[in-house]
Amino acid sequence: MSEPRDQFDASDPSDPFDEIVDTETDRDPDLAVIEAGSRTLRAQAGPPQGDPVPARPADPEVDRQLREVETELATRWGETKLEPSVTRIAALMDVLGEPQRAYPSIHITGTNGKTSTARIVEALLTAFDLRTGRYTSPHVQTITERISLDGAPISAEGFIETYQDIKPYVELVDAREEFRLSFFEVLTGMAYAAFADAPVDVAVVEVGMGGTWDATNVIDASVAVVTPIDLDHTDRLGGTPGEIAGEKSGIIKQGATVILAQQPVDAAQVMLKKAVEVDATVAREGMEFGVVSREIAVGGQLLTLRGLGGEYEGVFLPLYGAHQAHNAAVALAAVEAFFGIGAEHARTLDLDTVRRAFASVASPGRLEVVRSSPTVILDAAHNPHGARATADGVSESFGFSRLIGVVSTSSDKDAKGLLEAFEPIFAEIVVTANSNPRATDVDTLAAIAVEVFGDDRVVVEPRLDDAIEAAITLAEEEDEYAGAGVLVTGSIFTVGDARLLLGRR
Image (cartoon, rainbow, N blue to C red; front, side, top):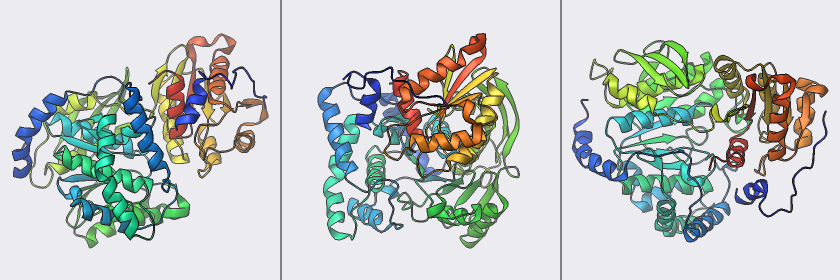
């Protein structure tokens, strides 16, 4: 096992690593009515431009105010400390006047693929001239990413204003309840309030964890989406896919349509039982919809998808991996269901609009290429199921002759399972740490890596910047410069830090 190197002066105030550590078209009549005003508002806002991940505010005063909000939010329970109940968020919604009921919603749960699916759903709805609000978590780099309007993150000014608007109501609920509202509950309240204020035509909401008692679960979504379920957060959700599905099935509401990705048998059984109990309609991947064919293409893949109303051919998706093709099929079916296709209407969505929407999709930190010569890819895989999908996607889409992994995980994750999934594709692995306090101890992760890879394939670099540099050096060895690559993975925090270090600001 290689020893760490000390090439950077940690006392240097311009050190980027220290900076990171310091910051840490038939529609429902109601939808048709609001669409006319929506087009004008969207035209004023304009399409999202450039990197979908926002930078820190350029205005020092705005940045100061945003940091103050972040500091106040950080005093609350973090996202890993939970009291499983929707009591507090329901109380907040009540004093805010139930903003989450001002618009229809699509609710997304599952273990992996939720954020990418949400982004694709958002792109499709936007292409059909609806104002969208999207709420996802966690963020890659900046907290404002979590709340999006019309396909673009809320502005820093908008985020600050929304927080200030609901702060008195948050404090009112804090005083009444046994426990203060958590970080995630306050953000959820902000998202729902921002969506009502915009106003949006439809909200696309990703569950934070589970479903039944998740803070997002105060909406009555007409479409419930369940991406693939696997083992994660087993201490809170259960030890089998079926048990986890029991918690996640809580987002399925009376009379809703359930879009069900391919699932383990026990998870599918739980979901179908829940659907029967609440008289929900179920559309299953591989039965009512799915991926008909896919071909590798430059910058992504070319798909033929079968939706609830028929086939969609020649759809280019600028994302890599079979898992993203399945996410695309799920997202398409969800949007069809939202528009009543497959139940009320036997037709397809406009093919040109669908193609345009898919071609515009971006999912930062999901097999995202951020550098060439050698190629550096970022992926937020953080559990074995996600790591297997990522490994398959890299193997299929990139012909690397030598791939070096840079890995930092969170301490509550199955690090060994994740490393075992990557072992077949990594020539060597550089073990490191990210800026999150919950990052796995480097020595602990290194010991696990040695167990999986063997001592001679493991390098240890406690600082992420050193780790990336070491991986690039290893990738360029043996005159394999053109065919070498680096994959930075293990946690969304690792990806966010790497994005900043590599200049994706």
